[in-house]
Length: 312
Image (cartoon, rainbow, N blue to C red; front, side, top):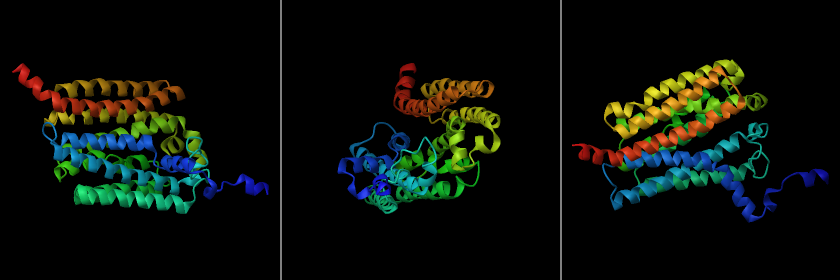
């Protein structure tokens, strides 16, 4: 009797609670940043202000990408439920607590992915649909199932799929993948390791308890801190590419210089004087860094032509 009372009964959960559980599977905060980066790619793909038709295309692409990204997040929760249950950061997830069954979670993920693919196929283009599906496979299968439990370089290799949103957005509006989109992809690819390793540093005990070979667990705190610093420097160089290529102007360059210096500063302090508090602050700044960097790129996209005209 006591065992029965202690075990969650998914079928008996009220509807509002059930909706919250399914919503939690989609990792809304993570998906929000994914969709934001994809939307930046869409807007940058259009010279000048988008037309009504381009706004409609962008809306459909946003919905489709959001659905598939949410499906990938749900599938990740399904695969990692036993790992999540061992970690304080993720033990609250519905799959880790047994509030949702495997069948419910898998069905939810499949339906979201199918709906997203249908939206992209019917109202955007097939290139975006297949690129988005490849991103789903890259994150949900290659990273989650294969790389994450096998190698401390999981986040570096698997970061390729997480860097795809601007490419998806660009392909949605242009119907092709241009060098500008690949530069945005490279920036996120280089940003991912210092962002994630800052988190892993102050969550190292969690990852060790879960048996995951994250870099602080396999190579130690000091080595990981050095890698964070080195990657912030390489990232800084990567963020200058849009200006060098002629994709952006001075607004973006000044923003990239300031944000890059800030991230390197965090990396330097983390390397020289580590604390969990500083690692947490570095992780939070990394999110601000990427958000403001892409926002500056978009602002530059619309304002730089006017500034050049005014100066001329």
